Image (spheres, each protein chain N blue to C red):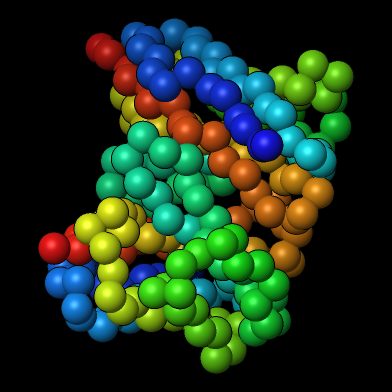
Amino acid sequence: GQSLEQPSEVTAVEGAIVQINCTYQTSGFYGLSWYQQHDGGAPTFLSYNGLDGLEETGRFSSFLSRSDSYGYLLLQELQMKDSASYFCAVRANTGKLIFGQGTTLQVKP
Amino acid sequence: ETGVTQTPRHLVMGMTNKKSLKCEQHLGHNAMYWYKQSAKKPLELMFVYNFKEQTENNSVPSRFSPECPNSSHLFLHLHTLQPEDSALYLCASSHARDSYEQYFGPGTRLTVT
């Protein structure tokens, strides 16, 4: 089968750094994406890793290790507006995006 | 504003009703998708359309019937649904079928009574 594992909940304080991990088992792999979804809102694309290493976009960075079937999303200088659900998604050999269950991030003052 | 709109935003229907969900994208994309999002479960891909042609049906029951009249519009026709079909139905689009970046609409919150 195909599966993605990520923690269900993470809590952090404003200004802190938080890392959300994602491990995957898929029959094919063409890249790992991250999406953010605020309560009641639409998922929005954050980042993509097709190759090993770190991709940085402002306060957010994403990392991929294909040999470990592992990636993470790093959020720095946390703000209250970062409270949301974060989904990792693998583009598998079927061309489909397979999503994880999502990690709910709560940022506290 | 993501460029993908969905109507209605909320829908309550009985098990014997027939209703349709509508999705429109203003991004000039060629691929469109329907997803189901239930509480505590991953987004589930339902259907994929590429240049108006259905390329993926992810073992979805026949009570869900998609329609894609052109690359900008996507419908999901619903009939004789079950209470377990209550969920958020999300439409998405992307430039190409294999794009890793998809643009989502706000979703239709469906409740089946």
